[in-house]
Image 1 (cartoon, rainbow, N blue to C red):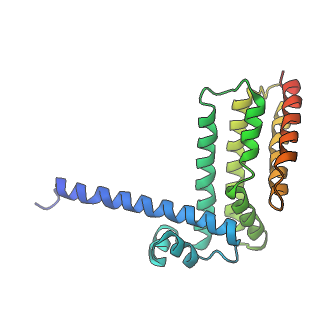
Image 2 (spheres, one colour; image 1 turned 90 degrees about the vertical axis):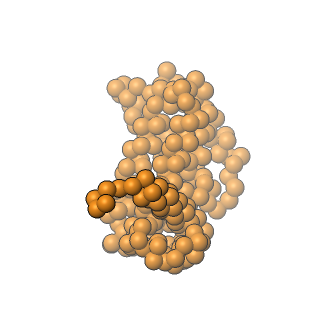
Length: 204
């Protein structure tokens, strides 16, 4: 009957929706991997589509432009990492601030940060890409700052606390940059320990 949706129609749509979501996720993960490994110049939509095991047409159905694909990819993984970070401390503010600092630093030493860095460099030269990346970085930065405040139990109504938390995140980003060229784990561990001492004093 015209205008009536049958159970069979609904059953047909659900798997299609699931397949569409799965395809989108594969594309996002492949884009981040390509960007981290090959940089902006070597990460075309075709390369990403091949890595994800989908056609170029399917990739462009989900992401009409290259810029759309890569900004969405970095945002997707950033959200996943934020979720994972909160899951490490499900009760919220942690007593062990060193563990929180270490987890925050880890955000900047993996493939997400490497991919994001390539995206930032590309945005500095690509006018079409810059507004999207600038907006993305602002959103990711605000979310990471909120998570840090929550997990550290920081009271930002006190003078200097907001700047202290932001300084921690800036330090973590710097450690991530140092880690791009060499394995800086030993030095990073000492810095994390010292920052835990400083934060315990500043946030007491």
